[in-house]
Amino acid sequence: ADKKESSEHRDFAVKSLSVFFVLYTFIAAVFGIVMMFTDFWHYEILNGVEVIGGFIWNRLWGVYTDPNYGGVLSLISVLLSIFWYKKDSKIKFKIFLIINIICEFIFMSMPHSRTTLVAFAASSAILVFMLLENRVILKLIYQILKFLIYNLKNLMISVLMIKLYLKF
Image (tube, rainbow, N blue to C red):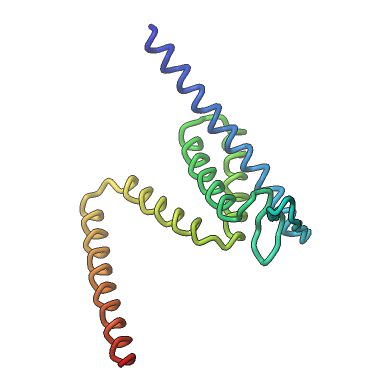
């Protein structure tokens, strides 16, 4: 009985924290999107530290101190939303999660963050591998990736050789 109570308590704590995180990032994304559409930006130096917010330099900072942080946190919120969409059965909660995913994708597209793109690519690849249960498809994808990596290596060597040749 103690293990079951402990497990239920842990599950409740994890859900509470992750839902709080999703709610926080949803509010931050909505404020960021409003800042973008109203062309709101803020820039000042306080005690030698740059404080930047809103939509400035063609990047959406929103309420975050760095556009990379905002993009990555939005990605985490999307992944949690997908997880809870599959796990939870309440229709109102699912509607909120869908709205959150849409807002987060809008927000993620505007910081122009390479960090977010790399994290998105990595998490998408992991998600694809987790969803694929058919080993034939998995083997095919593995062979394609191996082929691409091998050819990319050869291309890089060729480019380096050409640069070295042109240098001398």
